Length: 234
Image 1 (spheres, rainbow, N blue to C red):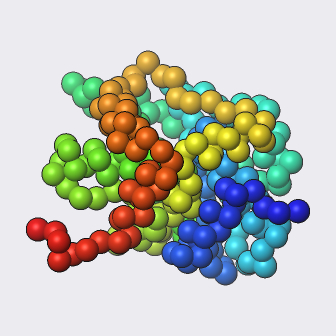
Image 2 (tube, rainbow, N blue to C red):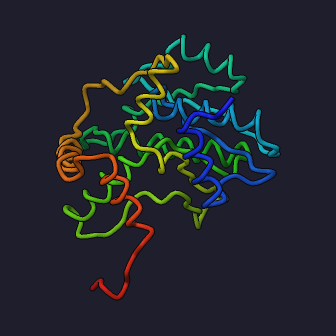
């Protein structure tokens, strides 16, 4: 049976950046949303069809302001034979006096817990579910708000820690993930906490959609990041 197109795109980026090697121990950040669920499903599928000697585990960071992974989705992961652990973190208790709780703070705390867990339990890589649209939104945000040409790299090795970040979904447009999730019957949720303030990212997302009115244009913008003409830059 042929593999879903989305798995072929993930296979390609993993090959291009040598994201998975024999002996790797990979921790998957599982939020319960469509992106990380596709990632979890892919690792389960790859472990069955590829002759690779690697370990993987899904970790869900739960807090007092977020939902646990839906029970139906937990059952799906059990069917995929994916080891899943839930780790509770009291994020609100970490907010300092006069500090405003926001999405960036929450994401930073979650990333810290993922990193601490990985180091403590011998994982050398953390897999995150950022996709092509995430990378392009971040690119535009950094250009317009920070005067900086940067975005989410597919492979990032920490200098201070024995862990690397991998993003196997960066070749995958969000529309492809949505279609695959619907076809697969995922029970997914998105963050609905009352502390959300994603107004800037929502504005950037709308601008990206206006700028790239076809899927092909979005892909062209993304792959331009790998086709840099240095002589025509400042």
